[in-house]
View 1 (spheres, rainbow, N blue to C red):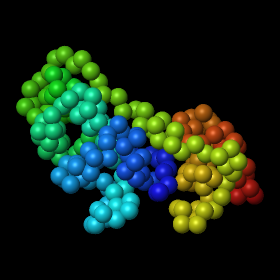
View 2: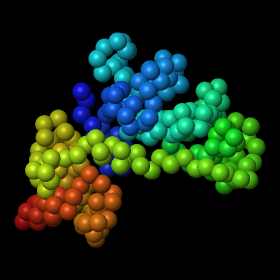
View 3: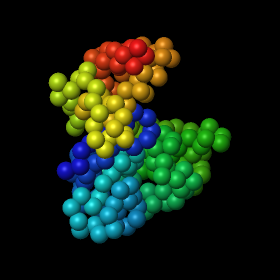
Length: 219
């Protein structure tokens, strides 16, 4: 089973197999495979032969996109035909098309805020919308992933050099967060609480370990 990791910014530093992707997004494995086969949403890391074990591996961005699509398709019953049209209209956003802007639902149709005009529009028709009753919430994606990635108590506050992880750069045990990244925040005057907000997987013990590591490196 592929190991799962949080992200410290918008870049991907971990991967999620089908079962984890289904648990995190509310979609079924069957839906994930159907969307992959149809080309609607491919996993970022996929083997050419999808019959191989772990041949479909999803990135963090994939997970957030799938959470949005799960809300649209399964909860609000937006049709696949409409979603495919929305996907085409948002293609200018590239791989970020489902996460680059906040999406809404109105009458089983998808609405967004046009960044060029700051107006709410129905994506496919371009019609301006005045009343938006429902906003899709995706902000808890990180929280859902954290529940799958609880660190062992002994890992907190510990700095390690893990083989094959960030070219053996010092990281906090149980994560792929570089100690050097936290040091940059400390040097910039960020508080421990502010740093943990940026790196939710870290603890106060980790921040203290980073301070000690920084002092040792400076000496």
